Length: 90
Image (cartoon, rainbow, N blue to C red; front, side):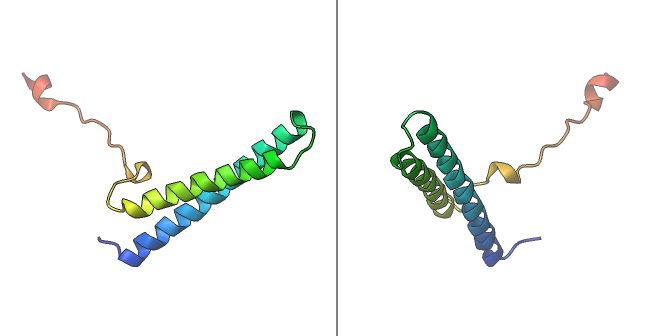
């Protein structure tokens, strides 16, 4: 069964939004910890971490929209190897 192109674009947007939010939040958290521990509660590590995280998310989104025909690792399904009946019968 084939999927519609609108569904594929929608899934890509969902993935991009989720990925960007996770990377933004992670950068914000790392910047906050560094600000508290190392930089005497300055604002710039927080802003830098959030910006770096958002930039990584944006780069991943651009990559996923530019190469739409590449298979992503999340779409692979592993199959178990079947026993070789030819080797057993000989």
